[in-house]
Amino acid sequence: MSETTPAITVRDLHKGFDSNQVLRGVDLDVNKGRSLVVIGGSGTGKSVLLKCIIGLMKPDRGSIEVDGRNISRHSDSDRRYMTQLTGMLFQGSALFDSLKVWENVAFRLLNAERKPRKEAREKAIECLAQVGLAPEVGDLQPAALSGGMQKRVSLARAIASDPHILFFDEPTTGLDPIMADVINNLIVDRVKALGATAVSITHDMASARKIADEIAMLYQGRIIWRGSPDEIENSGNPMVDQFVHGRAEGPIKMAVRKS
Amino acid sequence: MNIFALTGSLTIEGLRETGRMAQFAGRGAVAGVLGPFYWRAFFSSLMRIGFTSLPVVGLTAVFTGAALALNIYDGSLRFNAETFLPQILSVSIVRELGPVLAALMVAGRCASAMAAEIGTMRVTEQIDAMSTLSVDPFKYLIAPRIAATTIALPILVLIADIIGIYGGYLVAVYGLDFSGPVFIRNIAEFIENRDTVSGLIKAAAFGFLIAVMGCYYGYRSRGGAQGVGAATRTAVVAAAVAILASNYVMTSFMVEF
Image (cartoon, rainbow over all chains, first blue to last red; front, top):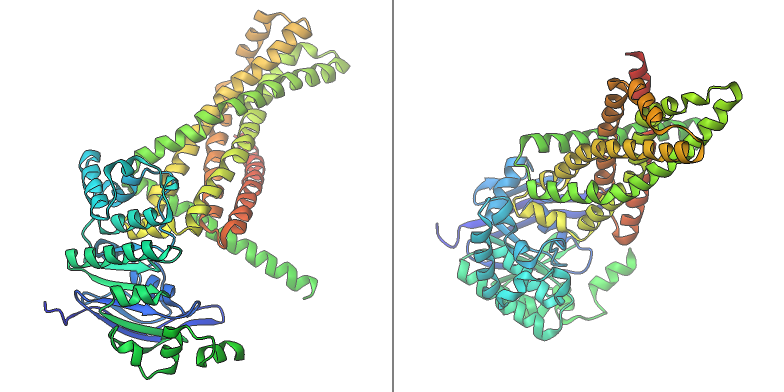
């Protein structure tokens, strides 16, 4: 298939929690092999959007197609299909603290694909090397690692089964600028090496500019702007402008005050 | 809200919660049967729940057996029936106190640990991560714990029964001048298989309930440390209530048949 074929198509996606309507009709296409970054303020529903796409949450309304298959029914087979295609890096790394680092990286290989431990360990060490970690790190517990190293291990876990689609939930949150840049470089490098489609959500504009082929802004439950990283400086959208430049004054603040 | 509306809403919520719990228990049990079964997780749970609970269960049993012997002796003296101490002691421990006390101790120790561990995994997105890695959390986390607790508890109770009777034996023989061989012979002649088996059946049921409560409240944890703390507390209380209530129901069936 060509690179312009959508790997992910989201139409009119709605999701709410009690009276709080978080997503109010999201439309989104992500073409194969492209990296889309969704930006937006806290509480705008970025994580909810990601969790709906990956199958961790069931949308109230709307459709999600991944590689042409509609997965919005949220059935067991839909979830299985999604998890076989995808890898995800979680905001807090979400490493299993009862397992060693290499067992975390090889978790899918050991427990879903039932690979022998020796083979899974070799693959885990290889993935750790791809994110710049030494083999000795594999025998440590996650609690012994710094935040940056945990993110790298989480990235190694996400790529261990060569997924077609990668999701990154706030990949640089809580990291210093240098480590954040290291993670950004690793993401760009690994996504390109795998030829994967990537969807990331972040507040961090430096990260968005670095890893995105395209940026979309989510505001009040809808995508209000979409364009390339070069276009975002002159988006012509006051809300995007305010967010990108981190200004306290502007339409987004006004909306917060009104509510 | 008036008292009738409050009673109604509490009843409905109670029934909903019971339904959710039953659904959870069923899903956990089915996950264990359908497989894949994670033997490593199962044996690890078996060690943590069974083996490491032995000291606390043993201590509870020996002191309970000893105190029970004193109480039975003191009470039965009033109508000159103190010679029945071994029989009353053994049947009380094997049918009732062994299973219930061991289960309460395991509930305090393990239901709380399961709720805290699974709850922490829930609020730190580890359970979500597991799902994205093509591993069903019910198969990896819940089923092995339910199976391990259901198997471990009868074994623990069998050991608790022996230690509890031994505690009574020590008091009877060294404190109340009973003959050791007679004490043991009286128990051996009096205790029937159904006494032991009924205690072990209860123990298996208690084990299942402890694991379901610990896993259920942990799995439904929300809201960070406070949510995990609340889940842990609720799991222990719910497990203890479930043990005591189901004990009555099972006992009433067992004495009928």
